[in-house]
Image 1 (tube, one colour):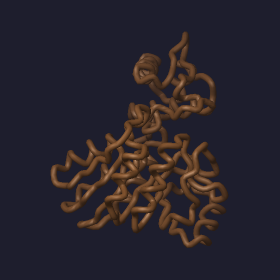
Image 2: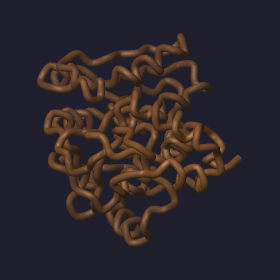
Image 3: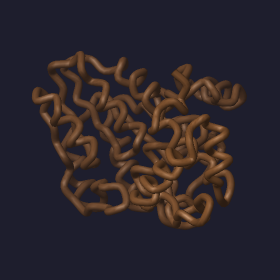
Image 4: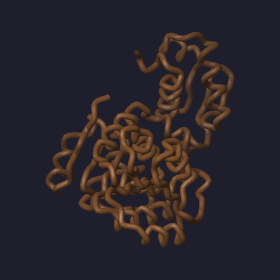
Length: 263
């Protein structure tokens, strides 16, 4: 099935177009995706209800959350829909690194959330997270020990950050950290728009025996405001197969394991 045959895939593609341009046109989208204009208008209405775009006559324009020049992070649901198939595949691959009995630490990124959605074969895990979304997903299994860190809740991502969260983290030793990032650069390291998220991520890294970064290749060769760490702090990078060969080679030279998934 083509990605555009599904409503989620089509809406993700619409958001991608808005990310690359300033507007979209109903007629053009209808022709490109092979669906009726009525269907496209419904897609745009749903995305507007989620505050991901603004509808105008004949199409839609970027909303505040879609404009990358804005200093605030994009809406969590919007971020989750972008490159959804890549994130799902990365999550499945990352879950294969887990063993029964592990204590895993999961950060608040949308790709890290996909790891939690792929734990069906396990029966004995302790899951520590600063993500309300990841906590709710983990509880659905009804068999894992789930620990949500205390602290300040960031409304934009439903993540727990700040000194109290960092103090909680220091109580634990973890086998594996699954770390999603907004921006990745071999030269500048891992980064995020939020200073509080970056600080919490740094403490997470210090508490994990193995650090596994999970992100799609569109995050590569970018730098955000707040520094998290350099790539040599990572044990493994799991991303999609569009990772530039030069970046792969540089990471391998740093003794970082690189795993790519085909989508």
